[in-house]
Image (cartoon, rainbow, N blue to C red; front, side):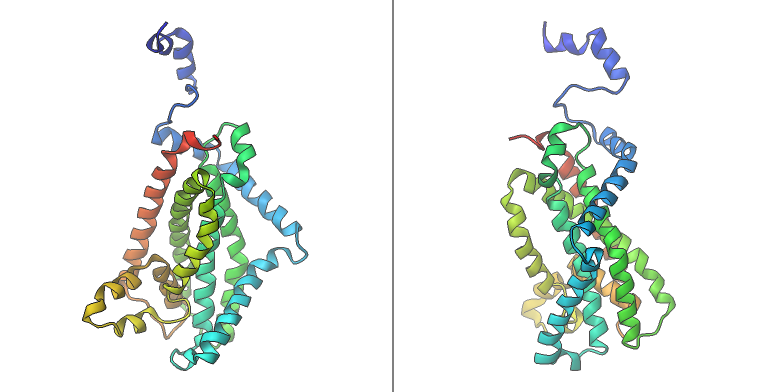
Length: 294
């Protein structure tokens, strides 16, 4: 009996009617997306359970999600604000710096946790049949839930520095939503790469650190690019369209009265989110049958 005969057998036709497919066959993109939607409740429960488990393992629990960016901001303020005196060049430098640190930390945590979504749950991957994209999505949702407390602290710090509470603050949920979609797309890419080569997860923190220094967390990208000459316009362009700096600048434009963001940043933010998510999801989907093997 040939493979074609098996696929045309009554049993195969009955299985197909009930949505069953042969083991190892690549699901279509539409059916794959639908199967993820069917497991949306599991995705949310998975993210919440991991969040609760992480909080129970340390005495300070979720407070570390606030302490880590705060401690980083304190170090950067000492180095750049006090030693290099950047605070004299930028109005409300503390609010400017803390906004950059908190916003970039959200992307950093989402990508790094998503990168290990498959390898950290390899037992689950090998034991159960489900769309593997659920795992990077769950880790990203987990980081989003953690970020709620961080954003509240960020708002209090910004207000404490004397910034007024204005209507522009309502832009922040949109910025965070776009940033989340972008970060999930990049997490999909690194989840597949890490599943294939685990050393990628060891390299990623160094890459994220370099990215942070190029994203205007501690300085103004606009001020820096204005200093580039004609021979370095390419560098100015790369810094300007850097997605991390775009989401940071939009956040500063929403929270800080003296740092308005240019209108084109919104178009760039939407474009980066859509491109990263679509390409990242397709890239991850194409490796579906390779996860958990080896």
